[in-house]
Length: 167
Image (cartoon, rainbow, N blue to C red; front, side, top):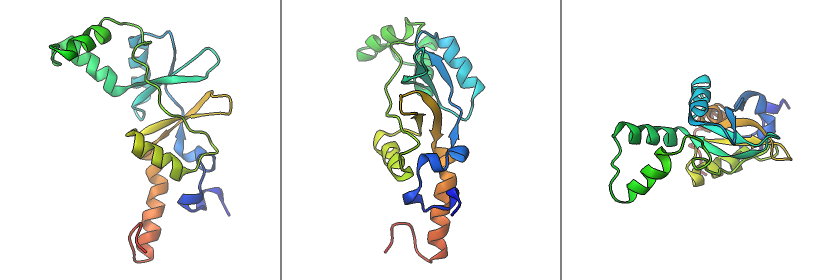
């Protein structure tokens, strides 16, 4: 059976990595915000920039939302009163990204797509870093790309005359 014809429930990230895993946007842990923005512009399919150490191991993520929030502070769009004043000081006075990196769960090529989907739903994320056994960043699994495989699930259910999840 060709790798891409497995049922969604049985498909591993590695089975579809040539179709669903994209080259990740990455910066080193000592990068500045300008480098993060440059990486976001260079890879418009991604909404994140992954931060790695000198050995390429995944450390965390800087999201588009974080960069937009900083832009809002600097442009005066975001309110800086009360609790957000602390965030304003923390976020806008930093040019490096150390305090902006958030840890995100990563996946490997051995993870099942159904488990990856569960992580995305529970963690409210649209994409996940793909790492090798040593934790080195090797790709990004983007939810829009995951829809390619999901479409097969919906089409197969429609062909049977049912809906996904129906008996």
